Length: 349
Image (cartoon, one colour):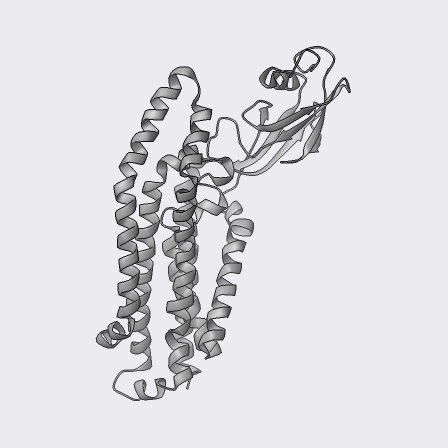
């Protein structure tokens, strides 16, 4: 069975291994230079307090490869389920070759165990290697990325650490299960992709925020948590727009960010314009003598009692989240695997 499985699987395995070798080689060769440029830039910007501008320039320069390698890791588990998992049994059932295989000396259970074990472990190992290499390479970029692309952000989190290994194992067994139930290769591939995409969207939106209770704190209004401020003439008010950043917690995953007035009432959410009552005829927010100083104006807004209330997960929860989420996918994978063995022995003919 091991020889037969390898004969059937070797083409896909060799092609995947070649692509991973190329990707690993490219990242290994460029990673040290990337880390060196980051370290040099940090050493320089700390002397004149210009690190915010350095982060923007550095990330903008490498944003395209950053997104490209992250996309590779995000897509790899889906491709495993689509091309390795869904056709594994569906193709045998569709062609009728299972009637020959299962009437030989190899039992159904052993046939399925070898298929799942050899191909599933290969898929998990390859995806884990890809995820860890990309995590190492993108370390300097993760530290300088915009809050929306920080390592804890839903779009990036799934392309880092060991979580992709859990995704790949689950996607593979999900494809096998769907193929076993549908018995047609193309419909099984389509359903596997749809189901896996739905689960991958539900996890960061509905499950991950509640794996550990989030932290809720209030912060003063400053340039660190404001993405924009609008002042029009002598209207006696300004409009403050809060961003996703949490002051003092770089890389945190902000679940919500609300602007509070001095009484503690919410007047705007993240990305919304919040009306702030502040003098625009005199003082730091007055535009009469030219564009107001944003830092001084926000300090005045904060002095008047306006605050940001943020609910967030700090960066130091990255690895606990990785282990918990990988464990969840491992349990789902084990459950589907058990179902496959039960179905192939009792219900499949």
